[in-house]
Image (cartoon, rainbow, N blue to C red; front, side):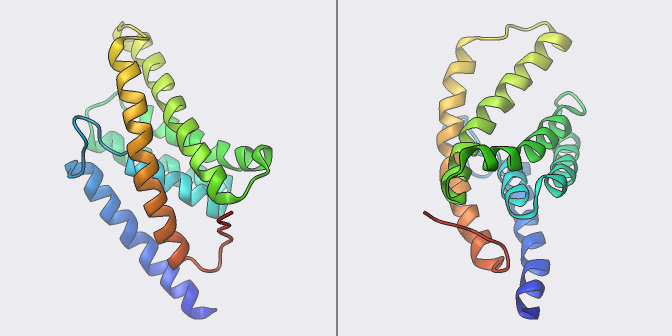
Length: 168
């Protein structure tokens, strides 16, 4: 048991650091679409640790992303905190194995993230809410988030053996 806690305490921050660097430098992309690694790590952390810890982790990741990007300050912190808070409710409503719920939540979270971003940009920057770019970007990011989300979910489930990761 002690070895599992040591692995989790050491490897999860290492994975988070690599993920933050991948997101900051936007190394991986398909066209102009980049995976949202920080959102994926927030979801994985909230699924394995609970909604309260997911909220705190989401707030920290969102604030870090706000500092790294030039977006409206606080918008990412708000969105990621909300995604961390809703994870447990989504798990209870879905009544499916965690892996399937994770996949469904990544799709829902990506859509919710873009809807909230566009609402905030309409309020603060007077832009159109539903434009063509909105409908093109969402499916591409859902696909790329699913691919990398499953990879991160598998990595975290291998290193975090004390948590419950159901597959099917």
